[in-house]
Length: 257
Image (cartoon, rainbow, N blue to C red):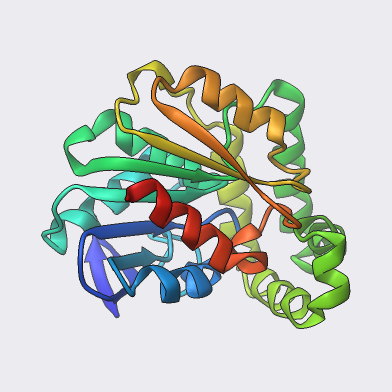
């Protein structure tokens, strides 16, 4: 389904009935990374997910991207669908979008789930994302895909579920290099969030093999978010929603019960 949000056409999905859950994907992803999680959650909840502007089947609009703009798009989706306060689930880049929305529009969010959550990137990591943007603009998505895919999933996933590796590789390569570069720069410039102002109960999920947003980063979030709990997802790396969808859905349902 498609909906215009803040002047940009967005692709989104809506499935199930019950209390609403909104899923926000990470950098270079799209709403389909949540498919397994959605199937499980939709047995008990109304589950909504979207392609962020510049990702998947959503348009890019004009100008630069920012965490603030993406958060405004998610808020516009919640408003357009007339949803009551939602459980907002964000992965990686989507975790920054979710944090921003939870602080600035607290009336829209009653629970928060951060998967592979980002706290704050120090200058060396900011520089790395800007360099990635330059590289993909100059050489295309193929220049990044091998290194990116190798670290995106746990070694066990690559060995036991090679089809997941292949599909994730395909998703990454479908990104428009220009829009991916803009997203990298937006991530590098992501504003700090006053996490002491996050009043919603928060579940922090992280894969035990996640090198992109390691357990230490999740522990930092746990220290800063007043009401939060940590759950480690076994045999999963950064794209844990593809590796352990049932386990993630079970932890979210347990958290909301």
